[in-house]
Image 1 (cartoon, rainbow, N blue to C red):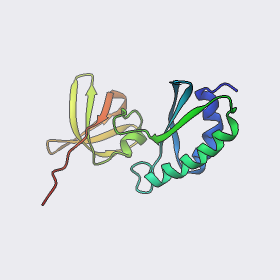
Image 2: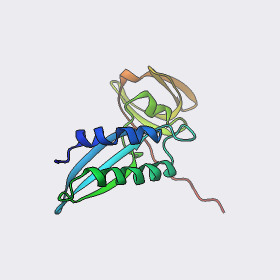
Image 3: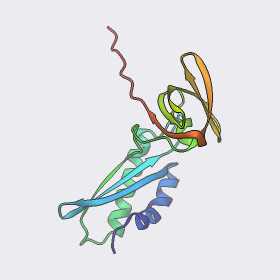
Image 4: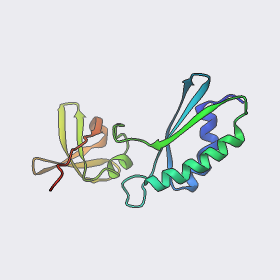
Length: 155
């Protein structure tokens, strides 16, 4: 059977859902004689801020077993399972909600805003910018990316 992302998504969706997770995306590409199958997962996790490492690890074991059973032995592959990643753009209300408290850079039609996500509902995000809260319609945000903050180590 030929491996493609739609087929793999059909196979793995029940296992991912049973683990309280969502499929963010599936990428398949050649890696020498093998295929590299990358599955990126998302979800609320135990604290509402994304899946925990334990949740990803548990899902990985189950997905590996399932794919080993379903993929023909003449199709060698390498499986990688991870979270959607902090560098992925925030595109849906749930992505913003899972990043409340984080610093984001937002591209709008009239410029760029950098601020901390304060609140989210289905249609808008409230961002704290220079001590002021600013409500923005999700539809008005062209691109939103979490900014990595480096914390200073204290003695």
